[in-house]
Length: 240
Image: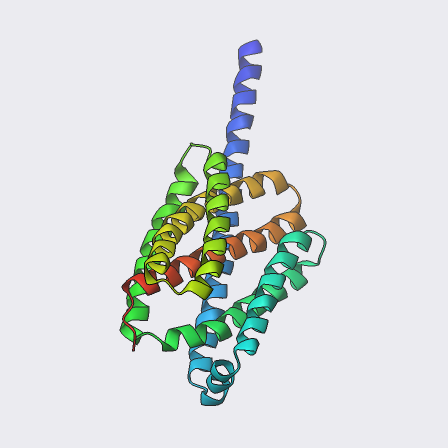
């Protein structure tokens, strides 16, 4: 009887583990689907705005407009990160799509500075490297928490260095920022993928929380992808 009871427990545990893996797979598929949708919205908005002479002229001739949009994007990310679990699911989705569209408007100016082939080349490299690091973050058994803390400090350093170089305009410093940023965001792609797995296990059983953390995870991966793309575009892109 005892052996039979143990076998039943093992069978029950195996079934639970299979269900957990299947649930995690569906969850991550949803996260990447939302991230892909955000990228599509950004790409469509960027190319549409790039074709609008009136809009581009307004942004180029009025730097305060671009700065205002950048501040709005930053505030939107902070608001989503801090309040997503307290807002409705549809609100979270709407804000994510809104952020993706706003980012597309600001990126339209950047894309015009580079040839279309350069943009496509940088996007292809970004997709390949981002995909590799995400897979690594998913399959590795190494806890990347400590690495994540180091990467976050590196990100803060990059922001400070970028702000200083806005006034100095030193090309060698700009190149250093790009190279360091490349490693930071490649690392963050792996770290955030692993962190999103933890989101699932922490929220498992709470359907609404799972849906909201999927949007939050998509936003984090979206930011990693976009920043990695912009860095690679600066490093390998050909200007018009």
